Image (cartoon, rainbow, N blue to C red; front, side):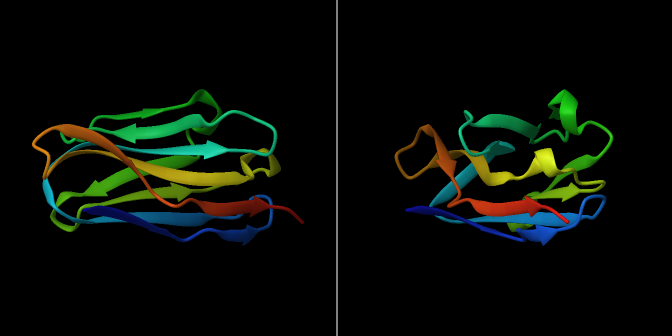
Length: 120
């Protein structure tokens, strides 16, 4: 079994910062890409950022220059540093890992979601 556990969400004022973490545990043989998605009320889930095992990163245009994704392969953990937060960043944030697991195949795993609310 594989589990992803997220932490770090909360309420912050516009212009503030938050750091999200997501750690994987269980029957993990290898982890490929790690990413963060978000879903705002009434909207579809969207990709926020990804980081490959090589360290290559990719961001949605709306967060470029404000968010930074990073990973610690030794800890099976991905981070999302969010600065200069805006009300439109309010959403539930989900982490996603591509994991080579006990079924000897690559599968997508998701965290439980953490609420980020940006409001004064």
